[in-house]
Image 1 (cartoon, protein in one colour):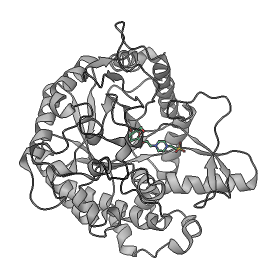
Image 2 (cartoon, rainbow, N blue to C red):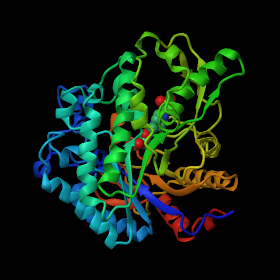
Image 3 (cartoon, rainbow, N blue to C red):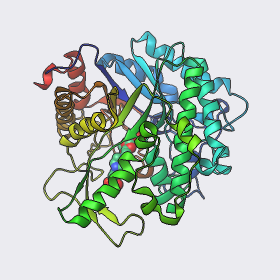
Image 4 (cartoon, rainbow, N blue to C red):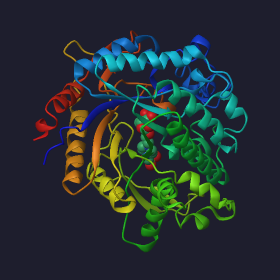
Amino acid sequence: MAFPPDFLWGVSTSAYQIEGSPLADGAGPSNWHRFCRPGGAGAHLAPGGDVACDHYHRWREDIALMKELGFQSYRFSVSWSRVLPGGRGPVNPAGLDFYAKLVDGLLEAGIRPLITLFHWDLPAALEDRGGWLDPDLPGRFADYAHTVASALSDRVEMWSTLNEPWVVMHEGHLQGSHPPGHRDFRELPRVSHNLLLAHGLGVQACRAAGARTVGLVVNIEPKHPATDRPADVAAAARADAYMNRHYLDPVFFGRYPEEFPALFGEAWPAFPEADFRTIQEPIDYLGLNYYSRGITRHDPAVPFGQWSSVPHPSHLRTDMDWEVYPEGLTETLLWLQDRYGPIPVYVNENGAAFPDPATAPPGGVRDPLRVEYFRTHLQAVLSAMARGADVRGYSAWSLLDNFEWALGYAKRFGIVHVDYETLKRTPKASARFLSEVVRSNGQVLG
Ligand code: GBH
């Protein structure tokens, strides 16, 4: 079993995590920019993405690096507040121009640009109006999507609306670790519904602006019960509904998982039927972000949902404390085809944080655990394809070590090392490994 000749090999990043210069050239502040400042709920993360990898100035060097490594595609996100500083209203031409130049540079280097319109950084002005709780936000997102797609759809074929709506909802409104820093489960249904409406309207807006291929990117983690006790089995089903079926059931079936009225209780609203026609707008592909699985047990001490995760006693865990579980990627790919039918899938993120030195040693950065992570997960993709999964591409997370959100710069996901003192880029052994994978179209996996 081999990868088909047109399999698309790439790397991923996101705007706030790598760009730096968040207010340059007329950009407005984003929610993440404000979150990480003194007085913000994430002030301990200061200076946040103020410098990050300085990709805003070093993008030419980063394109050259990807070209040298042989990648065929580059998935990045556009910062809404660069393009529309106030979230709505007048366009900031310099903001749009940054991405136009990036796209042209990529095309010149023979690398296909894949654009994500929303990878978590929201214009602060829109957060002030309620953010994802604001019923107007889906419409604002569609306007923004239309603006960007109109400018770039002549050169960019593949688009995605949202990256991981689950994280926006869960971390922003239940855990409080991302902006707006709320901890109120009663907000979750409305936040999710607005994210889904934004997605549906966003697909329509992208198409109206000439985008050919439009999809949604979700994070999926198989939820395995910790024991076969009925309480644990039921807890795993609730966790699966909450994380894995939460956005895909509405998009593909026009309804929320059947567990939700009981899960949310009195906080579960009646949504207008007509909304689901927007949400069900057909998509051209599904983007899958896969990192790990969740071993789940019933846990009455957890106020919302009554489940928690238990670590596997012996499996390796990454620096994020996530279990290394490549079988879960095969399982997820097969589950997607099985539940949602024949839809092209792109693995849009997969990768691992393991500790690397702050400064690259003269001999280069050796990251054998990350290499092994990629090798086993790519083999897992192949097994799923051998069993019928329609996987069209694979994009590693991430090109560069970068700002890992609520965990700052301590966690390194890059295949290219970044020295945060000098901003020097040094490809790690994992970058060389993936480069060989691309060049041989997977033959080196054996
Ligand atoms: C992605 O999200 C993001 O798209 C990207 O920006 C980020 O840098 C990257 O991953 C690395 O974090 O241990 O029980 O809390 C990751 C989505 C969802 C994966 C939650 C891990 C943790 C389960 N994550 N999951 S738990």
